[in-house]
Image 1 (cartoon, rainbow, N blue to C red):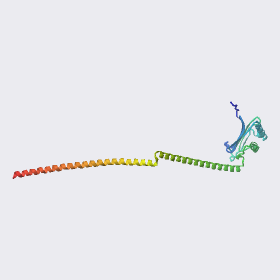
Image 2 (image 1 turned 45 degrees about the vertical axis):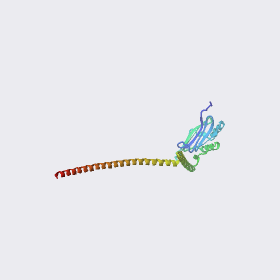
Image 3 (image 1 turned 90 degrees about the horizontal axis):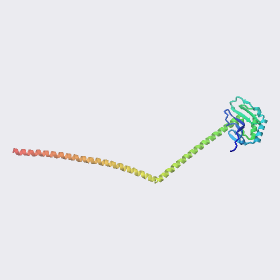
Length: 256
């Protein structure tokens, strides 16, 4: 099992907005763990420099030469709501120990301290170091760039969604064509539909004919029955008159 050394923060410098965020500002650290690095985040851009014990000793010697030890235990602060930033610095090393902080105000060696990080250890500059008017212009330009990138990203997402929809539509059309092909083609499908329709019409027509034939038969049977009834009445009437005639003839013969 590899030996792991407990992480120890040797140098920690933070400079951000009032809420301690570093979207515009610094976070520079030296941490003593398995490897020794000076790491930095400046305006959300990241980098690092490999350290060793000799470089760490040189780093602390330079800070002492800048009279950084005079900051120990102090708070530099003033009311400036337009600026609205905070910072802190902590150093924990045998050669130098200190802890200080500030809000909208800085020690006399502040610019020298920042220039040392830039020139000696290649830590980039932050927009927070610029004069206020120039700083606002840079922030405005950066905001416009972010909006343009966001707009382009939305456009790319929209185009991608349209491409996906077109691809799905093509896949669906291909599936319909394959289905028609498997069923014998669109022509066969149409013929099957027409044949089914004709069969339904024939079945419907057959039922109607059966109903009509049944009704016609009933009418014929009713007419026949009426004729038979009428014939029967006529015959009865004929025999009735015949009997009366015969009776009258007999009566006339008796009188003579």
